[in-house]
Image (cartoon, rainbow, N blue to C red; front, side, top):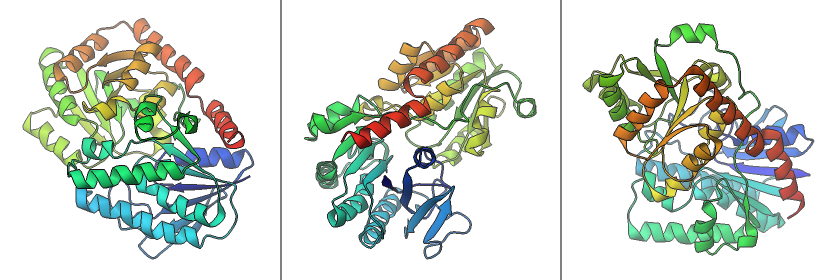
Length: 402
């Protein structure tokens, strides 16, 4: 079976679709990628890439077709939209002239919805079925995280979203809670399939890395890893760290990653004199994340208070669960439900700094045995619900039982 994966983001950018492509290729499928030039999250082309360079390349035996794209830059609202639509435009032209016949098209949509357009362009030529994997709900996520409230723009995005779903043969959802929204967008229930995210096999329970441990602050370590963006609600994290510092200064907040709000976080740390409580350590290769997680006492996940975010399972939850660590959460809805069901950590409401502070202090006061049990629960829940090979098996069945 030949599979074309359409995704705006791909290696060397760090997205889950990289491992899905690799997993399918390892199982004997012929996999090719239609994607853009890498520029996420910093907004500039990666070294060795430019607007005109590297149209084709090979990664781990997988052929990559790269279309032109206007980079995100500082990722302001207007520049972000230019980035989204430039990929849709250039990759649609590329799809029209793409050589080869594919049996299935898998579209990966963490945002934007316009990633579906090049898949439809190819389908018009070859009548190839599209499996559209929804990671982010549109246009709702645009208003929640992007700050766009123009009624006309939202209506146009709503029509575009419904049209893309209509042209897709199956619509995969990363959270079962997405189903209600898609039904409201007139997607037939028979087209909707729950297909959650997994993680790479290197996310697993390991012993603490003593070299990394020595580089971290001494104390009870709460670690966040991922995008430092608008959706992650760093205002609440910072305010909670401020509250906790007055009660238990032994609790340390460690942030790994980069993103649009990193400079804001740096400024707030200085303004509030939290240099000895909240640490920004920068970005590291994803393969090193389990080594860092092994040195944390618990792992932190957060999202802003918004109905759409309450329907989402943040992909870092699977990473955290796989590494068998207790999880501290500041979010509503589906993500929190999973953690409570798994007995994997403590959950506070989104955008409630005092409650998150209370939960952090409570977790820091737990016995080593109680924390260890939470970690065991994390990995056990992951194995039953999100394990990589289990979900690759499910994807194969989705493809063959269309």
